[in-house]
Length: 316
Image (cartoon, one colour):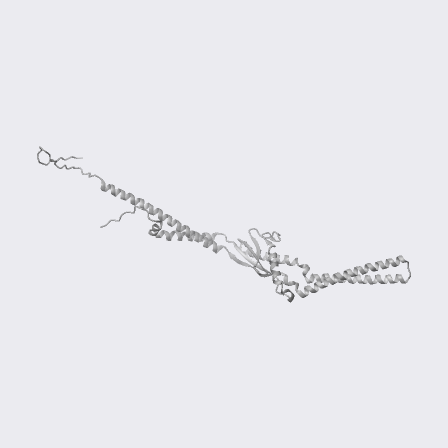
């Protein structure tokens, strides 16, 4: 029958872990589950996204050549109007919510994002930012709106008509003054009034013609093509909840493996110390003197002594 020798030297870390494989299974699994639960309990960050576009697609033939590049540049410019303080820094973004905008590369689309811990709040913030941006951009384009230009044209038409009537009346008055052979001062006065009326009529006519050409150009080119419109209402696009769960579970798994390796090494070294202690005890036991209470002395032969055996017994 053979007896197993106790372990007196520590093994390598991997060998120690292999002999205690249950540690490599239990600890990582338990800590991974705990990490997953901790990740689920952590407040996630939600992201909502809305999209706006420069232009409605109503592009006339004269705009095709430069329209795409122009709308791309306008999208990049309009995206700078959006920040954490709202549209143009109006400060109407809810606390704890981050709002930002960026142009989609090589397109006329603006991506508006809102991030925060409130799922419904970020959707509302993104939609409000998109609506406010559309309103702010389009309100600043009033001078290119055909309706506004038409109202200016009507006003100038009325003023020009009145000035023309006044000019005609001044001409009539000047002719009558000259026909009646009145004083030279009276004639000069009526002619001066007629000249001023003519000048006012000419000025209003030039303004009327200029605004009329502007209106015709806006109608022919479709000025609404460059308006900013919402092409995608705000909706939830991302959440860090799943990411938190995966990250914390992976962290628990790694920590569990590290702890399992550490415990396996510590247990292996403890076993080696115990084995060395047992080996030392066994060695001392084999080297210990005889402790029998009776010591038997053998006869010592010598010259002049009688052969025999003398037995002396001692009691310990």
